[in-house]
Length: 81
Image (cartoon, rainbow, N blue to C red):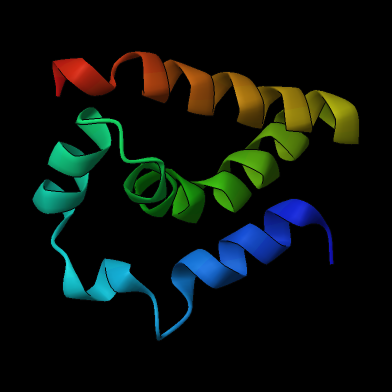
């Protein structure tokens, strides 16, 4: 299991605190600098971004770049939400 899968599994497990907090609470917390809340918001999308990137590029490394760039763009626009 690679690092992204481990983080993704822990962020989406049944015991995850994301289940007990709404998206709006997570968003506010992430905007205030809470890295755990940020991970809980973004990690669920990481695998889908990777798969989409892989379908488009046909290359594992380029797909990883697509995922990273997409998550960085989301992060940069976090305060405007």
